[in-house]
Amino acid sequence: MRSRLRSVRGLRPSREQFVSVLVAVCVLVFALPFVISLWPSQAPTGLPNGTTVAYERAELSDVDLSDCETWIDVDSYCGQAVAHLEDGSQHQIGITKDGATAGLDDGDAVVLSISTTADGEATIYAFHSVERGMGMLVIAAIVLVLVALSVGGKGLRAFASLVVSALFIWMFLVTGIHLGGNPLLYAGLTSVLVLTAVLHFTHGFSAKTLAAWVGTVCGVGSALVAGWIMSAALRLTGLDETTSAAVFASYEIDVRVLALAALLIALIGILNDITVAQASVVFSLMHMRGGEAHDHGHGGGSHGAGQGASGHGERTSATGVSQTAAEAPVASRRELRARRRSGGGERSLMRQAMEVGRDHAASAIYTVSFSVVGTSLASFVVARSYDMPLWALLQSETVANTIVQLLAGIFGLVVTMPATTFFAILFARRLGEPEEGAAGSS
Image (cartoon, rainbow, N blue to C red):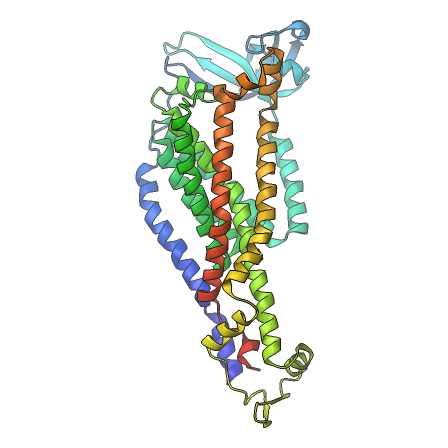
């Protein structure tokens, strides 16, 4: 009879799965109407002066880069070539310094930018990039195979989540901001939907995933508030080498809000990694404690193992009366929770989990710091070539904005760690199902 009950129970979701699904569905139901109403309904416009730009593939011939060796200006043309487009037409194109650095030669496949003025009287063909599509697909396929072999199904789901999230960010977030939408509103909706979908699709529906989701939301929200306050206090404009191009393309974009939106998107991946790892630590500690309490309650692990193997072993009650496993009383949920707490109180568990979490948080802080320095290394080298002192470099708009984003991210990390630990313990206590072994069923 009990084996039938177990089989029927295995067909239905556990309480933690039900709650996790319910939360995910509620979030999606709440956010989807906003996404539908805000979805970009028109194609992106051209530049403010009416110029439109198209991109085509082509093959080069008669490449001449002789003047590029001593060329300094990276934005003007130092070379030329003949481009053969897929429609059979041929056009003379200009090549900038980056094309010469890529080592272009006759027969190379490239991508061209085709700029047409508003009156349609002038069309300029120029080198845009080397054709890398097939190479990137091959490399991605190799990495995908390695992920499947080393990480398994969860790694493949994470890879699929990455691709779908990138497409959604491009179609919804980037296009919506380009068409004049509020960057923070679009980034907020994107963050909620991407975080909810990616976490649950990759890691499944469970109390652990729910704790990681709540912890990430707490961290991202606190980092956003901190970034807003820091930016206002330091009077950051948000204008730097990257955002100035966005202002030129659309004068309606609020670059200060755009910088905060960028921080919001960047923190999803950083804090998500922290919360998933910390939730796993908490549940692993609780599992170890639950196992110790279970062994203690049944008079030793080896004896319990033997009973589990046979399924008909005897147990001795407090009065010395022998009972079979089938006759043993089933532990109530309250007794199971008491057994879990027998290995130590919640404060002790919180302290142990935070010890591991602090190590992870500390490593994440300098990892993020080094990544920021790495991405800004070229700007630092340029500043050094102008003999700019360090104190002046740190106060420039680009570096100061980067530092604020870094400090806001660290603030969010400080909030994320205890929040994830607290909710992981809470959900494990409230949503955890009794284990069959602990219930004494055979």
